[in-house]
Length: 149
Image 1 (cartoon, rainbow, N blue to C red):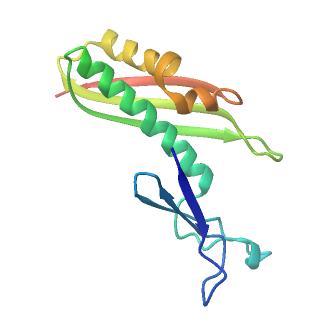
Image 2: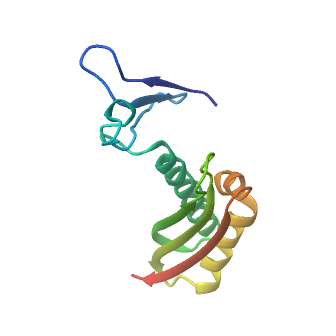
C-alpha cells in the first residue's frame, strides 16, 4: 500500500496547512488544519477534514466494512450500516486518541440482535486493522442499534 501526501502551499496565492493525498489506488483525499487566529501563518483554512479526522473516518470505514461483510457472509438481509465515532485525544503531544466509542446503526430485514452483536464483536476483536492499531493507545468501546426495515 502506498500514498503520496503533498502540501498545497505556499506556492502562488496558496497558504495555510492544506494537504492532498493521492492513494495507491488512484484516489484523491484533501486534508487541512484548523484556522489559528493567533498565528494565521501556522493555521489551516478549514477547507477539508483534519488529518486526525481522516484517521477516525478510516477506522469507521474499516469496521463498518467488516460488519457488513460478516452479516452478508452469514446470509443476513442487511440493508444499511452506519457507525458514529466519538473520540477523545491526549492533551499533550503526541495527541493520540485515548478513547474512541463506535456506535453502529444496522438496518435490515429480520436481522437478529445476536448476529449484529457478533459482527460488531468480530470486527472489533479480530478483523479491523484500523481499530486494532488505534487500540494501542485508546480505550475502544462499541454499541449498536438494529433497525428493522
